[in-house]
Image (cartoon, rainbow, N blue to C red; front, side, top):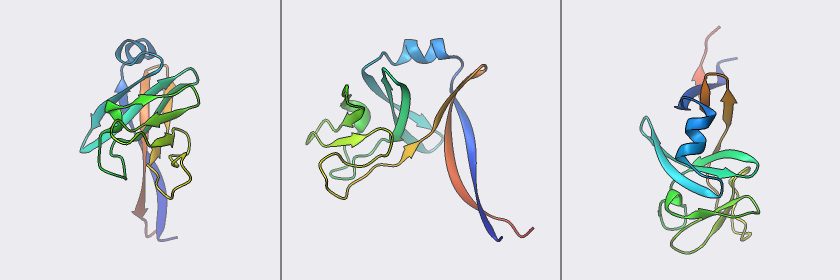
Length: 120
């Protein structure tokens, strides 16, 4: 196989307690990870992350809010995006890229999947 997918995990928070202190349940925040801006949401189901830029008009989703139904809402035109799938709740073809989040003993991590070239 010449190409394969691999996930790179980057630490967002040193601990679950630090994550809870930074983003309260029901809130969202924009966090810069390397050169990417991600919107991190804290719901009653845990932490979720999606691309921060709304595909409709480019607004920061981290300036919006999250709902009890598990979506993040754009602050400009109120577009809703499912935090698990990234799909627009309006039925339009818009979507944002979701990123996996893992809570581990040594912190809270976000995963970025990339396709890499592999000769062997």
